[in-house]
Amino acid sequence: MTQSVTASWGWSSQADMDWSDEGIVLTTRRHGETSLIVELLTRRHGRHAGLVRGGTSRRHKAMLQPGNTLAAHWRARLEEHLGAYSFEPVKTRAAGLMSDRLCLAGLNAMCALTVVCLPEREAHERLYDAFEIVLGAMEDLTVWSALYVKWEIGLLRELGFGLDFSHCAATGVTDNLKYLSPKSGNAVSEGAAGPYKDRLFVIPAFLREDRLGGADGMEGILEGLKMTGYFIERRLLRPHGLDLPEARYRLEDLLRREAA
Amino acid sequence: MAMKTGVEIEQLIQLLAKLPGLGPRSARRAALFLIKKKDTLLRPLAEAMALAADRVVTCSSCGNVDTIDPCAICSDHRRDKSLICVVEEVGDLWALERAGALSGLYHVLGGTLSALDGVGPDDLNISGLVERAAQGEVREVVLALNATVDGQTTAHYIIDRLEGTGVAVSQLAHGVPVGGELDYLDDGTLTEAIRARRPY
Image 1 (spheres, rainbow over the protein chains, first blue to last red):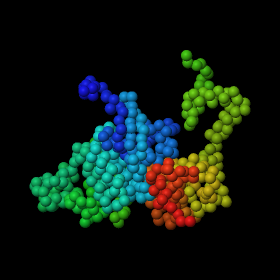
Image 2 (image 1 turned 90 degrees about the horizontal axis):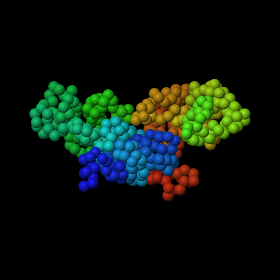
Image 3 (image 1 turned 135 degrees about the vertical axis):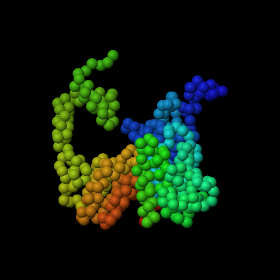
Image 4 (image 1 turned 120 degrees about the horizontal axis):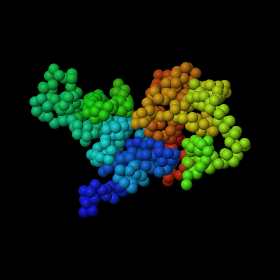
Protein backbone atom coordinates (compact mmCIF):
# COMPACT_ATOMS: atom_id res chain seq x y z
CA MET A 1 0.00 0.00 0.00
CA THR A 2 2.73 2.42 1.03
CA GLN A 3 4.68 1.65 -2.12
CA SER A 4 1.74 2.26 -4.46
CA VAL A 5 0.91 5.60 -2.80
CA THR A 6 4.49 6.83 -2.97
CA ALA A 7 4.77 5.66 -6.58
CA SER A 8 1.59 7.51 -7.61
CA TRP A 9 2.92 10.73 -6.04
CA GLY A 10 6.18 10.29 -7.92
CA TRP A 11 8.19 9.47 -4.81
CA SER A 12 10.74 6.71 -4.61
CA SER A 13 10.18 3.91 -2.17
CA GLN A 14 12.94 2.65 0.13
CA ALA A 15 13.16 -0.47 -2.04
CA ASP A 16 14.29 1.65 -5.02
CA MET A 17 17.18 3.11 -3.08
CA ASP A 18 18.37 0.05 -1.20
CA TRP A 19 18.40 -3.28 -2.96
CA SER A 20 20.38 -6.48 -3.39
CA ASP A 21 20.79 -8.25 -6.69
CA GLU A 22 23.18 -10.44 -8.64
CA GLY A 23 25.23 -8.70 -11.31
CA ILE A 24 27.99 -9.24 -13.87
CA VAL A 25 30.79 -6.67 -13.92
CA LEU A 26 30.79 -4.79 -17.25
CA THR A 27 33.21 -1.91 -16.75
CA THR A 28 35.10 -0.05 -14.07
CA ARG A 29 36.25 3.56 -14.12
CA ARG A 30 38.56 5.16 -11.61
CA HIS A 31 36.98 7.75 -9.34
CA GLY A 32 39.48 9.72 -7.32
CA GLU A 33 42.44 7.82 -5.99
CA THR A 34 40.87 4.88 -4.23
CA SER A 35 37.33 4.45 -5.56
CA LEU A 36 35.86 2.92 -8.70
CA ILE A 37 32.63 3.53 -10.55
CA VAL A 38 31.51 0.01 -11.38
CA GLU A 39 28.88 -0.80 -13.95
CA LEU A 40 27.05 -4.08 -13.45
CA LEU A 41 24.50 -5.92 -15.56
CA THR A 42 22.13 -6.95 -12.80
CA ARG A 43 19.31 -9.44 -13.12
CA ARG A 44 16.44 -7.30 -11.81
CA HIS A 45 17.82 -3.75 -12.13
CA GLY A 46 19.48 -3.93 -15.55
CA ARG A 47 22.67 -2.05 -16.38
CA HIS A 48 23.37 -0.15 -13.19
CA ALA A 49 26.37 1.88 -12.07
CA GLY A 50 27.50 2.54 -8.53
CA LEU A 51 30.51 3.69 -6.55
CA VAL A 52 32.76 1.14 -4.85
CA ARG A 53 34.75 2.86 -2.14
CA GLY A 54 38.24 1.42 -1.93
CA GLY A 55 37.62 -0.35 -5.25
CA THR A 56 41.21 0.12 -6.40
CA SER A 57 42.54 -1.90 -3.45
CA ARG A 58 44.27 -5.20 -4.13
CA ARG A 59 41.48 -7.04 -2.31
CA HIS A 60 38.68 -5.60 -4.44
CA LYS A 61 40.36 -5.21 -7.81
CA ALA A 62 40.55 -8.92 -8.61
CA MET A 63 36.84 -9.29 -7.96
CA LEU A 64 35.90 -6.21 -9.98
CA GLN A 65 37.16 -7.55 -13.30
CA PRO A 66 34.67 -7.68 -16.20
CA GLY A 67 32.91 -11.04 -16.43
CA ASN A 68 32.86 -11.76 -12.69
CA THR A 69 29.47 -12.27 -11.08
CA LEU A 70 28.86 -10.51 -7.77
CA ALA A 71 26.15 -10.50 -5.14
CA ALA A 72 25.78 -6.73 -5.04
CA HIS A 73 24.05 -4.44 -2.59
CA TRP A 74 23.27 -0.93 -3.85
CA ARG A 75 22.30 1.95 -1.65
CA ALA A 76 21.67 5.64 -2.34
CA ARG A 77 19.97 8.56 -0.63
CA LEU A 78 17.86 9.24 -3.70
CA GLU A 79 16.97 6.85 -6.51
CA GLU A 80 18.58 9.02 -9.19
CA HIS A 81 21.90 9.23 -7.32
CA LEU A 82 24.92 7.22 -8.39
CA GLY A 83 24.80 5.34 -5.09
CA ALA A 84 27.35 2.96 -3.63
CA TYR A 85 27.84 -0.76 -4.08
CA SER A 86 29.03 -3.27 -1.57
CA PHE A 87 29.51 -6.79 -2.85
CA GLU A 88 30.52 -10.40 -2.38
CA PRO A 89 31.98 -12.49 -5.20
CA VAL A 90 29.76 -15.24 -6.61
CA LYS A 91 31.70 -16.42 -9.67
CA THR A 92 35.20 -15.09 -10.32
CA ARG A 93 35.75 -16.33 -13.83
CA ALA A 94 37.70 -13.39 -15.37
CA ALA A 95 41.10 -14.83 -14.41
CA GLY A 96 40.27 -18.09 -16.18
CA LEU A 97 39.20 -16.28 -19.35
CA MET A 98 42.26 -14.05 -19.58
CA SER A 99 44.57 -16.72 -20.93
CA ASP A 100 42.35 -17.47 -23.95
CA ARG A 101 42.29 -14.65 -26.47
CA LEU A 102 39.04 -15.81 -28.09
CA CYS A 103 37.21 -16.03 -24.75
CA LEU A 104 38.59 -12.65 -23.78
CA ALA A 105 37.45 -11.19 -27.10
CA GLY A 106 33.98 -12.71 -26.57
CA LEU A 107 33.77 -11.28 -23.06
CA ASN A 108 34.92 -7.83 -24.23
CA ALA A 109 32.42 -7.83 -27.11
CA MET A 110 29.51 -8.76 -24.80
CA CYS A 111 30.47 -6.14 -22.20
CA ALA A 112 30.95 -3.45 -24.86
CA LEU A 113 27.65 -4.21 -26.61
CA THR A 114 25.76 -4.28 -23.30
CA VAL A 115 27.18 -0.91 -22.28
CA VAL A 116 26.56 0.69 -25.68
CA CYS A 117 23.15 -0.79 -26.46
CA LEU A 118 21.27 -1.31 -23.20
CA PRO A 119 19.59 1.65 -21.53
CA GLU A 120 20.53 2.16 -17.89
CA ARG A 121 18.39 0.80 -15.05
CA GLU A 122 16.03 -1.21 -17.26
CA ALA A 123 15.73 -4.87 -16.32
CA HIS A 124 16.35 -7.50 -19.02
CA GLU A 125 16.36 -10.74 -17.07
CA ARG A 126 16.51 -13.03 -20.11
CA LEU A 127 19.51 -11.17 -21.47
CA TYR A 128 21.22 -11.40 -18.08
CA ASP A 129 20.60 -15.16 -17.92
CA ALA A 130 21.87 -15.59 -21.48
CA PHE A 131 25.01 -13.57 -20.59
CA GLU A 132 25.65 -15.96 -17.69
CA ILE A 133 25.11 -18.99 -19.92
CA VAL A 134 27.57 -17.76 -22.58
CA LEU A 135 30.23 -17.02 -19.93
CA GLY A 136 29.64 -20.39 -18.30
CA ALA A 137 30.13 -22.21 -21.62
CA MET A 138 33.42 -20.57 -22.54
CA GLU A 139 35.43 -23.77 -22.33
CA ASP A 140 34.19 -25.00 -25.70
CA LEU A 141 34.57 -22.58 -28.62
CA THR A 142 31.95 -24.29 -30.83
CA VAL A 143 29.38 -24.03 -28.07
CA TRP A 144 30.03 -20.52 -26.74
CA SER A 145 30.44 -18.90 -30.14
CA ALA A 146 27.03 -20.25 -31.21
CA LEU A 147 25.54 -19.13 -27.89
CA TYR A 148 27.13 -15.74 -28.41
CA VAL A 149 25.33 -15.26 -31.75
CA LYS A 150 22.08 -16.27 -30.03
CA TRP A 151 22.82 -13.76 -27.28
CA GLU A 152 23.10 -10.98 -29.88
CA ILE A 153 19.80 -12.10 -31.39
CA GLY A 154 18.36 -11.92 -27.86
CA LEU A 155 19.80 -8.42 -27.44
CA LEU A 156 17.96 -7.29 -30.59
CA ARG A 157 14.74 -8.95 -29.41
CA GLU A 158 14.93 -7.44 -25.91
CA LEU A 159 15.29 -3.97 -27.40
CA GLY A 160 12.32 -4.43 -29.72
CA PHE A 161 14.12 -5.29 -32.94
CA GLY A 162 13.78 -9.08 -32.94
CA LEU A 163 14.62 -11.14 -36.01
CA ASP A 164 11.84 -13.45 -37.18
CA PHE A 165 12.96 -16.95 -38.16
CA SER A 166 9.47 -18.47 -37.91
CA HIS A 167 8.09 -18.01 -41.42
CA CYS A 168 8.94 -16.67 -44.87
CA ALA A 169 8.28 -12.93 -45.20
CA ALA A 170 7.33 -13.34 -48.88
CA THR A 171 5.26 -16.55 -48.98
CA GLY A 172 4.44 -17.30 -45.34
CA VAL A 173 5.78 -20.88 -45.57
CA THR A 174 7.53 -22.24 -42.49
CA ASP A 175 9.99 -24.71 -44.02
CA ASN A 176 13.23 -24.39 -45.95
CA LEU A 177 13.90 -20.95 -44.44
CA LYS A 178 17.49 -20.40 -45.51
CA TYR A 179 17.81 -16.64 -45.80
CA LEU A 180 17.04 -13.48 -43.87
CA SER A 181 16.04 -10.16 -45.34
CA PRO A 182 18.36 -7.28 -44.34
CA LYS A 183 15.44 -4.92 -44.80
CA SER A 184 12.74 -6.53 -42.66
CA GLY A 185 14.75 -8.91 -40.47
CA ASN A 186 12.37 -11.71 -41.46
CA ALA A 187 13.26 -15.15 -42.82
CA VAL A 188 12.97 -15.86 -46.53
CA SER A 189 12.48 -19.38 -47.92
CA GLU A 190 14.87 -20.78 -50.50
CA GLY A 191 12.12 -20.78 -53.12
CA ALA A 192 11.18 -17.14 -52.54
CA ALA A 193 14.79 -15.95 -52.37
CA GLY A 194 15.30 -16.68 -56.09
CA PRO A 195 17.41 -14.01 -57.76
CA TYR A 196 17.76 -11.98 -54.52
CA LYS A 197 19.92 -14.60 -52.77
CA ASP A 198 23.06 -12.48 -53.03
CA ARG A 199 21.41 -9.60 -51.24
CA LEU A 200 20.09 -11.73 -48.35
CA PHE A 201 21.84 -13.05 -45.24
CA VAL A 202 22.30 -16.80 -45.05
CA ILE A 203 20.74 -18.21 -41.86
CA PRO A 204 23.40 -20.56 -40.45
CA ALA A 205 22.45 -24.19 -39.80
CA PHE A 206 22.76 -23.88 -36.00
CA LEU A 207 20.05 -21.19 -36.03
CA ARG A 208 17.80 -22.99 -38.54
CA GLU A 209 17.99 -26.25 -36.62
CA ASP A 210 18.09 -24.50 -33.23
CA ARG A 211 21.02 -26.48 -31.90
CA LEU A 212 24.57 -25.66 -30.89
CA GLY A 213 27.21 -26.14 -33.53
CA GLY A 214 25.98 -26.92 -37.00
CA ALA A 215 27.21 -28.65 -40.11
CA ASP A 216 28.58 -25.29 -41.28
CA GLY A 217 30.86 -25.00 -38.18
CA MET A 218 32.81 -21.77 -37.77
CA GLU A 219 31.63 -20.53 -41.17
CA GLY A 220 28.09 -20.62 -39.80
CA ILE A 221 29.14 -18.66 -36.71
CA LEU A 222 30.72 -16.01 -38.95
CA GLU A 223 27.55 -15.83 -41.07
CA GLY A 224 25.56 -15.39 -37.87
CA LEU A 225 27.86 -12.64 -36.60
CA LYS A 226 27.67 -10.83 -39.94
CA MET A 227 23.87 -10.93 -39.73
CA THR A 228 23.51 -9.83 -36.09
CA GLY A 229 26.27 -7.23 -36.43
CA TYR A 230 24.41 -5.66 -39.35
CA PHE A 231 21.15 -5.38 -37.44
CA ILE A 232 22.73 -4.21 -34.19
CA GLU A 233 24.55 -1.47 -36.05
CA ARG A 234 21.62 -0.42 -38.26
CA ARG A 235 18.83 -0.67 -35.71
CA LEU A 236 20.41 -0.02 -32.34
CA LEU A 237 23.52 2.08 -32.89
CA ARG A 238 23.25 4.16 -36.07
CA PRO A 239 20.17 6.05 -34.87
CA HIS A 240 22.40 7.34 -32.04
CA GLY A 241 25.32 8.07 -34.35
CA LEU A 242 27.32 5.09 -33.04
CA ASP A 243 29.20 2.25 -34.73
CA LEU A 244 29.76 -1.31 -33.59
CA PRO A 245 32.29 -1.31 -30.73
CA GLU A 246 35.91 -2.08 -31.61
CA ALA A 247 35.77 -5.14 -29.34
CA ARG A 248 32.97 -6.62 -31.48
CA TYR A 249 35.05 -6.18 -34.66
CA ARG A 250 38.01 -7.81 -32.94
CA LEU A 251 35.95 -10.86 -31.97
CA GLU A 252 34.78 -11.32 -35.56
CA ASP A 253 38.33 -10.87 -36.82
CA LEU A 254 39.76 -13.46 -34.41
CA LEU A 255 37.03 -16.00 -35.20
CA ARG A 256 37.65 -15.47 -38.92
CA ARG A 257 41.34 -16.22 -38.39
CA GLU A 258 40.41 -19.26 -36.30
CA ALA A 259 38.24 -20.55 -39.15
CA ALA A 260 40.96 -20.04 -41.76
CA MET B 1 34.51 33.16 7.77
CA ALA B 2 36.72 32.57 4.72
CA MET B 3 40.44 32.73 5.42
CA LYS B 4 42.22 35.63 3.72
CA THR B 5 45.58 34.75 2.15
CA GLY B 6 47.53 36.18 -0.75
CA VAL B 7 46.71 35.09 -4.30
CA GLU B 8 50.13 33.45 -4.63
CA ILE B 9 49.62 31.29 -1.53
CA GLU B 10 46.10 30.35 -2.62
CA GLN B 11 47.43 29.35 -6.03
CA LEU B 12 50.14 27.23 -4.39
CA ILE B 13 47.51 25.46 -2.28
CA GLN B 14 45.28 24.86 -5.29
CA LEU B 15 48.14 23.38 -7.30
CA LEU B 16 49.31 21.19 -4.42
CA ALA B 17 45.72 19.92 -4.00
CA LYS B 18 45.94 18.48 -7.54
CA LEU B 19 48.75 16.10 -6.53
CA PRO B 20 47.84 12.47 -5.85
CA GLY B 21 47.20 11.83 -2.17
CA LEU B 22 46.53 15.48 -1.36
CA GLY B 23 43.14 17.10 -0.83
CA PRO B 24 42.46 20.78 -0.07
CA ARG B 25 43.18 20.39 3.67
CA SER B 26 46.39 18.43 3.30
CA ALA B 27 47.48 20.80 0.49
CA ARG B 28 47.03 23.70 2.91
CA ARG B 29 49.21 21.90 5.48
CA ALA B 30 51.85 21.13 2.87
CA ALA B 31 51.85 24.75 1.66
CA LEU B 32 52.26 26.01 5.23
CA PHE B 33 55.11 23.57 5.80
CA LEU B 34 56.84 24.72 2.60
CA ILE B 35 56.42 28.37 3.54
CA LYS B 36 57.90 27.75 6.99
CA LYS B 37 60.92 26.08 5.38
CA LYS B 38 61.20 28.69 2.64
CA ASP B 39 64.99 28.62 2.22
CA THR B 40 65.66 24.98 2.97
CA LEU B 41 62.73 23.41 1.11
CA LEU B 42 60.45 25.76 -0.85
CA ARG B 43 63.18 27.44 -2.90
CA PRO B 44 65.17 24.23 -3.70
CA LEU B 45 61.89 22.46 -4.54
CA ALA B 46 60.83 25.26 -6.88
CA GLU B 47 64.24 25.19 -8.57
CA ALA B 48 64.19 21.39 -8.89
CA MET B 49 60.70 21.51 -10.39
CA ALA B 50 61.64 24.26 -12.84
CA LEU B 51 64.71 22.28 -13.87
CA ALA B 52 62.69 19.07 -14.31
CA ALA B 53 60.05 20.92 -16.33
CA ASP B 54 62.78 22.24 -18.63
CA ARG B 55 64.78 19.08 -19.03
CA VAL B 56 62.48 16.06 -18.72
CA VAL B 57 61.76 14.44 -22.07
CA THR B 58 60.11 11.24 -23.20
CA CYS B 59 62.56 8.69 -24.62
CA SER B 60 61.92 8.40 -28.36
CA SER B 61 62.88 4.73 -28.25
CA CYS B 62 61.10 3.23 -25.23
CA GLY B 63 58.73 5.92 -23.94
CA ASN B 64 60.45 6.22 -20.53
CA VAL B 65 60.93 9.67 -18.98
CA ASP B 66 64.44 11.02 -18.44
CA THR B 67 66.52 14.13 -18.99
CA ILE B 68 68.31 12.62 -21.98
CA ASP B 69 67.00 11.07 -25.18
CA PRO B 70 67.54 8.08 -25.58
CA CYS B 71 67.04 7.52 -21.85
CA ALA B 72 69.72 6.23 -19.47
CA ILE B 73 68.37 2.67 -19.75
CA CYS B 74 68.31 2.64 -23.57
CA SER B 75 71.82 4.14 -23.80
CA ASP B 76 73.34 1.78 -21.20
CA HIS B 77 75.66 -0.56 -23.13
CA ARG B 78 75.60 -3.17 -20.35
CA ARG B 79 71.91 -3.82 -20.96
CA ASP B 80 70.78 -6.89 -22.90
CA LYS B 81 69.44 -5.37 -26.11
CA SER B 82 67.94 -8.65 -27.26
CA LEU B 83 65.28 -8.49 -24.51
CA ILE B 84 62.44 -5.96 -24.39
CA CYS B 85 60.02 -5.82 -21.48
CA VAL B 86 56.67 -4.22 -22.34
CA VAL B 87 54.93 -2.26 -19.58
CA GLU B 88 51.78 -0.13 -19.42
CA GLU B 89 53.12 2.96 -17.69
CA VAL B 90 56.42 4.49 -16.59
CA GLY B 91 55.46 3.60 -12.99
CA ASP B 92 55.55 -0.09 -13.95
CA LEU B 93 59.01 0.38 -15.47
CA TRP B 94 60.23 1.97 -12.25
CA ALA B 95 58.75 -0.92 -10.24
CA LEU B 96 60.62 -3.47 -12.35
CA GLU B 97 63.83 -1.43 -12.12
CA ARG B 98 63.47 -1.34 -8.34
CA ALA B 99 63.20 -5.12 -8.33
CA GLY B 100 66.35 -5.31 -10.49
CA ALA B 101 65.08 -8.54 -12.01
CA LEU B 102 65.52 -7.55 -15.64
CA SER B 103 68.69 -6.66 -17.48
CA GLY B 104 67.05 -5.88 -20.81
CA LEU B 105 65.37 -2.82 -22.26
CA TYR B 106 61.81 -1.58 -21.78
CA HIS B 107 58.93 -0.38 -23.88
CA VAL B 108 56.22 1.81 -22.33
CA LEU B 109 52.84 1.50 -24.06
CA GLY B 110 51.18 4.46 -22.33
CA GLY B 111 48.07 2.53 -21.25
CA THR B 112 45.97 -0.43 -22.30
CA LEU B 113 43.40 -1.05 -25.00
CA SER B 114 39.92 -0.25 -23.82
CA ALA B 115 37.02 -0.27 -26.24
CA LEU B 116 34.71 1.37 -23.72
CA ASP B 117 37.09 4.20 -22.89
CA GLY B 118 37.86 4.70 -26.59
CA VAL B 119 41.53 3.66 -26.31
CA GLY B 120 42.51 1.93 -29.55
CA PRO B 121 45.84 0.57 -30.84
CA ASP B 122 46.70 3.94 -32.41
CA ASP B 123 46.50 5.63 -29.02
CA LEU B 124 49.22 3.36 -27.63
CA ASN B 125 52.89 3.01 -28.52
CA ILE B 126 52.39 -0.42 -30.14
CA SER B 127 53.69 0.41 -33.63
CA GLY B 128 56.96 1.57 -32.06
CA LEU B 129 57.29 -1.81 -30.33
CA VAL B 130 56.69 -3.72 -33.57
CA GLU B 131 59.32 -1.56 -35.30
CA ARG B 132 61.84 -2.22 -32.53
CA ALA B 133 61.10 -5.96 -32.56
CA ALA B 134 61.56 -6.11 -36.32
CA GLN B 135 65.04 -4.55 -36.19
CA GLY B 136 66.72 -7.95 -35.84
CA GLU B 137 68.65 -7.49 -32.60
CA VAL B 138 65.66 -8.39 -30.41
CA ARG B 139 65.15 -12.08 -29.53
CA GLU B 140 62.49 -11.93 -26.83
CA VAL B 141 59.64 -9.63 -25.82
CA VAL B 142 58.39 -10.01 -22.23
CA LEU B 143 54.83 -8.78 -21.73
CA ALA B 144 54.70 -7.35 -18.19
CA LEU B 145 51.14 -6.07 -18.40
CA ASN B 146 48.66 -5.97 -15.56
CA ALA B 147 46.60 -9.11 -14.91
CA THR B 148 43.36 -7.31 -15.73
CA VAL B 149 40.94 -7.90 -18.58
CA ASP B 150 42.19 -4.76 -20.36
CA GLY B 151 45.84 -5.65 -19.71
CA GLN B 152 45.46 -9.16 -21.08
CA THR B 153 43.40 -7.97 -24.08
CA THR B 154 46.32 -5.68 -24.89
CA ALA B 155 48.76 -8.57 -24.42
CA HIS B 156 46.86 -10.76 -26.90
CA TYR B 157 46.73 -7.89 -29.38
CA ILE B 158 50.50 -7.36 -29.11
CA ILE B 159 51.11 -11.10 -29.59
CA ASP B 160 49.08 -10.88 -32.82
CA ARG B 161 51.02 -7.84 -34.00
CA LEU B 162 54.38 -9.48 -33.26
CA GLU B 163 53.48 -12.54 -35.29
CA GLY B 164 55.84 -12.88 -38.21
CA THR B 165 58.68 -10.90 -36.61
CA GLY B 166 60.30 -14.14 -35.41
CA VAL B 167 60.63 -12.79 -31.87
CA ALA B 168 59.82 -15.05 -28.90
CA VAL B 169 57.05 -13.63 -26.71
CA SER B 170 56.69 -14.45 -23.02
CA GLN B 171 54.44 -13.19 -20.26
CA LEU B 172 54.70 -12.68 -16.51
CA ALA B 173 53.31 -15.56 -14.44
CA HIS B 174 49.97 -15.16 -12.66
CA GLY B 175 49.34 -16.75 -9.28
CA VAL B 176 49.97 -16.60 -5.55
CA PRO B 177 51.86 -13.42 -4.52
CA VAL B 178 54.69 -13.63 -1.99
CA GLY B 179 53.10 -13.36 1.45
CA GLY B 180 49.72 -14.26 0.00
CA GLU B 181 47.49 -16.63 1.95
CA LEU B 182 45.46 -19.09 -0.10
CA ASP B 183 42.41 -18.55 2.06
CA TYR B 184 42.23 -14.90 1.03
CA LEU B 185 42.88 -15.34 -2.70
CA ASP B 186 40.06 -15.13 -5.22
CA ASP B 187 39.02 -18.32 -7.03
CA GLY B 188 40.31 -17.12 -10.40
CA THR B 189 43.83 -16.44 -9.13
CA LEU B 190 43.92 -19.81 -7.37
CA THR B 191 42.78 -21.59 -10.54
CA GLU B 192 45.48 -19.80 -12.54
CA ALA B 193 48.09 -20.69 -9.91
CA ILE B 194 47.12 -24.38 -10.06
CA ARG B 195 47.13 -24.28 -13.86
CA ALA B 196 50.60 -22.69 -13.95
CA ARG B 197 52.14 -24.99 -11.28
CA ARG B 198 55.70 -26.09 -11.86
CA PRO B 199 57.49 -29.31 -10.92
CA TYR B 200 60.35 -29.33 -8.40
